[in-house]
Length: 287
Image (tube, rainbow, N blue to C red; front, side, top):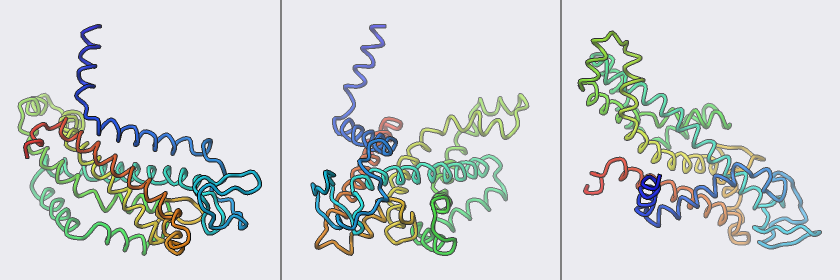
């Protein structure tokens, strides 16, 4: 017991301070997003034109607007809290969709080879040649905005990166002795792919997922900023900043506070992703 505790303590002491700090920031944002309905001081969609474009700390009839209000007098603190949930939900679901599609196609291409490999990898090349944000904008413009459509669009534009990693890793693992032994024992392709190969290539795929997670947050904010993502009256950091740009000179707080939250979330995810990459693949430190 004491040996295990000491080992855990030594491992925790090796974690950089920067990783601990961003972990706290990330955890705080996640908790705020989860408990926003109970933590938010007001209804994020409730309008009060008497409190329109008021700065941080403004009080009206005993109500304090700690981060100020927007153009319709809505409480910016409450909208920012709810916006965290929207950004995280879209990012998580988009990563799930893109990883499911990309990893499956990559393993299939790496295992079956032949014509299947050629078709899948040429499709990946085509998708990688098109800027993801441009493809997302065009697709959303055609399909129309909405939460589920946004998730599908983001997920189905970012799967090629997973496919390439899964394909390369599958080629390496497929020739290992225990895989050959499974084939000789009569295991089917599905069992080998998902029970033997997938657990052994999960590390590199997890690194890709952390990098993609931060990118999904930025893409959601960008599309919402352009009016192609989450639609009013739902709160999204991108849509809040889109409204705020019209009043930037007289109401800077509408852009500043959601922008700071967006920066902190993406920054913390990227730092955690870099640390996780170094932990899973120590050789990356020397590159």
